[in-house]
Image 1: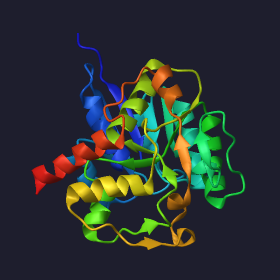
Image 2: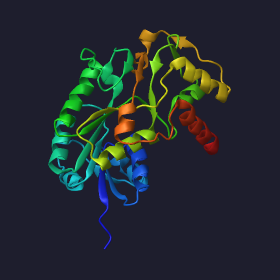
Image 3: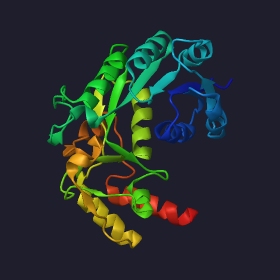
Image 4: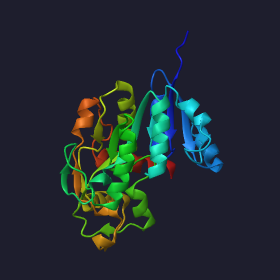
Length: 280
């Protein structure tokens, strides 16, 4: 008799969940896929991605369907941090799930500069860091594995689209370093963390080649035949563009025995530019 499929429940269905759904379908045993949405208007789009939608306006309301789906399931939380939602959702997952991964952000390091790894202390003074760290605490307290991701791109999203739209402006002189991860590699890390049962851990995700804003922009505009964009004062940019960090993600690659499909932006954005050509 064929074994039952595993269940994979996404708390929030966005870019990461959709890539992870595709990655899960590639496995030998397969998965039953479920994903939450706050509004019924998004249900059809979720269903079209091969994920059964569960409408959950609030994690403190009617959650019987969600609770049933999470029973003995792998649960992946990707929704933006919000204190009450993280607290309520983590408690529900703890009671039912077989394994939990919370996808966090390297924004917890705030204004800390330089090379960052799992031994680096977080920035507890930054408002953005504080909100995300509060969310992490809720999930860590119920035994979740936490993966802190830098800038995520891929599957049709990324800096190349902003450059093509003419809306992108270089942060300052472009000399600050930034790390990134292709969504396919991030989804592989998440699935591996669920399947190999590592000890409770906090991991950093990222590719092998942190670069300056300027280096990536120069590489992209050359291949897109675009003029180099104007710059704006660094202090006027979104906080995610003001960081100056190199993420050292060797631990997650080593511990989970991951082989990056896109080890640098050249392979990753090379694929995205090819995708753009295929769809144009």
